[in-house]
Length: 293
Image (tube, rainbow, N blue to C red; front, top):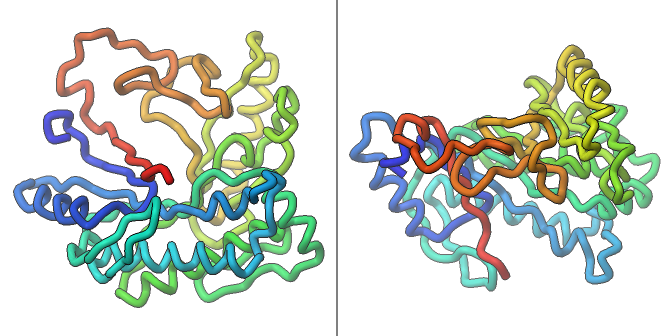
């Protein structure tokens, strides 16, 4: 990473203690530190359900799993955790406090659209969540209210250590707030998870949506919607998959509608060829995913 001039590393979930130990050791010899964006894995399998029809996020089991993952992640980052062995999860004794190198947090992964729909249908008329640090607006759906609850849980846990790092919700084009009527799969435009309905203070991070129509007939509409949301402002940061460097809109888009990079580093449609020097990689970030179950 040092040879690549990486300055930010994003991990999607808790990693083993050796990672955080190495992170501290690596930064101890650097004048400019490596920064960390720590992710919190959401209960994807439980939200999806065995029948793949989606489950209510307010199911106590699901909520408790997510809150437990949030608590564990906060304690791990602050070097204050002992996690037992579990399949598909990191474990061990965590004593390296990397909190001063944390650039921010991303809570959650991609939201299964049928789980969002099931949650909203099962909790019609629910009062908006109102917590100590985060609250849902009157326009929030029940699922967005659940996310406000989870973010409030995160903020309370961090305050136990005297910290308030920037925090974002994860999202993806399948559940973004924009309309995608040209999608071939109805689930790609079934529901929306809108971060503007959660919390206070911040600016919406909205990126251009991938357009599958080869003639890009709706590009103007999509960009107009993005500009309007930026004009209105937002209450909470959210994260949509977006590379640091972009090629033409919708070129080489991945199957889920998110932008995908070619092999190596670069945005969609970007091909720098084999000749890359260290300067061309400055400022890039790496992402580390979760161990498969």
